[in-house]
Amino acid sequence: MFDIFKYEFDREHNSIEIGGEAMIFHCHHYITNIQRTILDADYIDSRPFIIGSAVDSIHNQLTNLCRDLNSIGDKKQMAEEVYKAFGYGLIDLSNMNENGIELSTSKSFFSKTWEMKFGKSARPVDYYTTGYLIACLSVIYNIPLENIHGEQVSCMACGDEINHHSIKIGEANFSIYPAKTQTQFSDAPKVKLNWEFEDKITETFLGAHANFVGDEQGFIRAFGVYIVRNQSDFINRLQFEFIRAMSEVAGDYGVTLGGELLMEAGHACGFFTYGGIMTSNEWKTYVQPYLTKKEDWIYGLLSLINTMGWGYHTAIELTQSRAIFRNYNDFEDMSYLRMYGKSEYPVHWANSGGFTGLMQLVYNTNLIETGKLASEDEFKKMRQSKIGYRTNMKSGISCGDKYLETEVYQLS
Amino acid sequence: MINVKPLLEWVRQNGEAKAVERLLMKSLPELLKFGIKIKLNELENMSEIAIPEELFYKLSKIAEDIVGKKYV
Image (cartoon, rainbow over the protein chains, first blue to last red):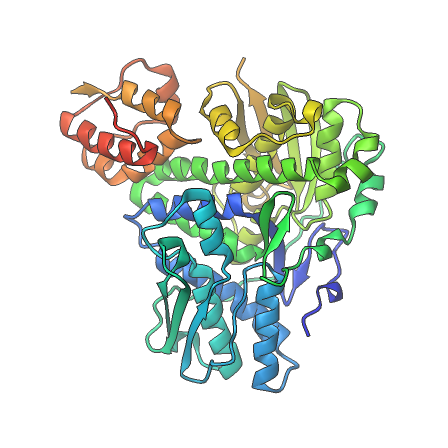
């Protein structure tokens, strides 16, 4: 029923939309990191916005995907297949009725990868699936979100045997957001990569995103990480709501502190996922033959990831000591504009952290020489060092600029 | 008053990436209660950051939770 090949990649804006939602990939390093950062601030009541962010995007998406489906059974099947295809695990909605659902599952991306990354959690971590089920109940049985109550009552990340979510009719216990606007792509002319093989690499990987769908367990294992296809507005709203809350607690200081930690999540993502790509067979076969100097590894990576829906990445300057990266129509700014309008400060923490992770990977590890990616312990040691790259978020589309621009530099 | 710089340096050396920022974020309400905002650039440029003793012990406890070791 759900067929990823139905959804065409937007080559002009380097994006992909499914059921009215912009979609982006993230790896488990990023997702677990960002969620832990938010939960660490336990003086912020984050549960309503974590679930609410998921509900909002999924509700919009399932409404669109189920629009032409007539039976409840078909709608349930669509929702189950989408969940699995996007890499979140497995859910069985057969017991859902107009009163809700008591759902158990042993396949959960969030619970599995949290434990992989951090060990046991003191509290349930699969807020996304609670939100997913709330949205399913609302769309399938046409129940207003205000009348649905959901919670996760057991979690494998806490040591429970199974994840259990309880979705009932009752007062909503999550944030409900106003409708968002259409995507406002920037029409700024792109400065392309100054590299002769860019188009060749991009053409080779165009459409490759469709290969990343959940396996029989509902997981997407690729490049040595678990990835999920996120509703971009879900994951980005988490960042925006978290920073808004940090701002309420401590003003600009809260924004800076929270932003540093969000950027670190992007850094880990850039390091491990880009590193996984650079050590993959696909890279060795289709990209590596065109690489001679270290900078080529960065150009090759940017040419490849421009087919993944994150916007158009390019490098304006690139040396070992300093780089200026741009992204035209980056997913974070596009999200911000859709949901909040103009921003007073740059909001592209994931993109900027990703650029920094890429520089670290190419210039501060021996990946190119050995073909091997540093371990989690080596990454930790590298990040503990004072020697490394710094990140300066120079401009952002949601701030009124034509493109995202980030400077990554070494301290002299 | 106690100099918190050695504690923060210990967290940086023994914790994961951005462990110091994590400590500051988890401790934010306590820091604000004492009217203290430790800026990230101060961590590198200042040799001493004096904070009240009571706050120091609260920070130490959170630091030990983050690092998973006893601070001695």
